[in-house]
Length: 492
Ligand code: AHR
Image 1 (cartoon, rainbow, N blue to C red):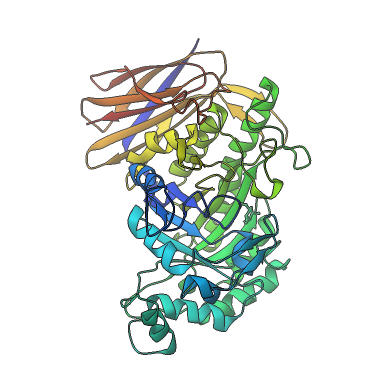
Image 2: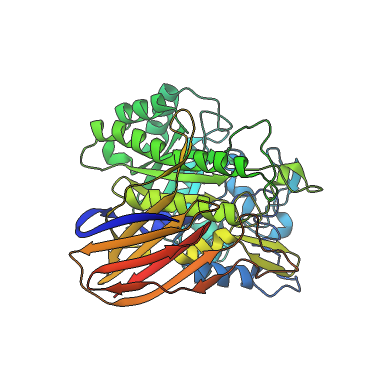
C-alpha cells in the first residue's frame, strides 16, 4: 500500500472544461456507421429512421457532447452530394482506406444530423481538402446552414429538410500531412487560408473552423500553423495521437503481459508531454488562448481481433483501456485552458470504442464506464489538484507511468474528483485536504477489475461501475484506491 497526500484548492481555477472534451468520433470505417449506428429502416433492430435506438440511448446516458464525422481518412475522399437524396439513387463508391468495400452512401448528411439531434450533441463535420475542392466545401456549408434562397437550399428542401441545421464545428481537412494529401505544413497553411475564406457564416450560424493539426510530436507543424493562420479565422488546431508502442507489432487488445501494460500506459501518459509542448508553442503566438487545441483523434490502437477484417479496426476493450481513458481525460481536464475539444477514436466497433455491437446485441466497454464516471466534469471549472506521485515505469523520452492520476472540477457548487490507480498490485491510500470549498459527501463510484477483464456479448456486465465508500469530513477526504481502479467522487 502506498500513501498519498492530495491537495485541492477550489479557488485556483485552471480552466473551463468545455463539455466537448468528452467528445467522440465516428467514421465510415468497418462497423462504426453501418451496423454500429445505422441499420436501415427495415432492420429488426429497434431504430429511428434506421438509427439504432440502443446505441443512441447509451450515448445519451454519458451525455456525448459532440460527434465528429465522416472521418478520418474517409473525409478526404468523401463527396457529400453522393450522400443526399433518394437512397436508391445515391452513388456507390469504394472505401479505399478501410477494406476497399462498397460504400453505398445510405448514411449521409441528413442521417448524421438526425443522429446528433437524437443524441443531443453538436455535430462536428470534417470537409474534404485532400481530394475535394473549395466549391464542394462551400456548397456543403451553404446546404447545411443557409436559410435563404440559393441552389443548395433548394436542394436541401427538395430532400425534405426545410430549415437549416446549426453547425458549429467544421474541420478543414483531416491529417493533410498524411492520408489527407501528404502536404507540408507551409502548403497546408496556405490551403487552409484559402478554403476557410469560403466557409461562410450563413443565417446567424457561426462556424468554429478547425485546422488540421500535428501528428503526435510534430512541433514544426504547430509552429507553422500558429505563424500562418489568422486568429480571427481559426478556432482550433487538431492534434492526433494514438498510443501505440510499436506500429509494426501493435499487440492484442485483450492478451498482454504486465510489461506490455506499463509500456502502453507510458504511451498514453505521453499525452501530457504532447499537450504541454504544443501548448507552449501556442502560448507564444496566442497568449490570449484564442485558438484551442482540439485532440480530435486519440485512443489505443491494437491488432484487430482474430478472424476479423484487418481494414475494420475492430478490437476488444479491457480495464487497461479504462485506465488509459482515465489518464487522458484527467490530462485534458487539467489542460482545459488550451484543450477545447477531444474526440476518442471511435465511438462504436472501431479502435477504443465505448460501444460494441453484434447484430441486435450491444455491450458497453470499460472505456464507456470511464466516460460515465467523468461526465460530471463537463462544463465545470477545473481546479488545482496536486499530489506527489510515484513513478511505476520510467521509460525514455518522457514515456513514464505515474501511479496516481487525478483531476477535480467544480460546477454548480458540486465538486467532482476523478482518480485512477495505475498500479496492478498496490493499493493507493489517499489523504486529501480541500481548500476553498465547503460541502458534504454526495456520492462515490468505482470501476475496478483484473486488468484483462472485459465485457463480451455472453457476459456483458463483467466490468461495471459500483457505488463506493469514501470518507469526507471537515474538508478532509480519505479514499482507498484498489489496484487498477478508477474512482469518481462528488461533494455537494
Ligand atoms: O481512426 C482511424 C484513422 O486514424 C483515421 O481515419 C485517421 O484520421 C487516422 O490516421
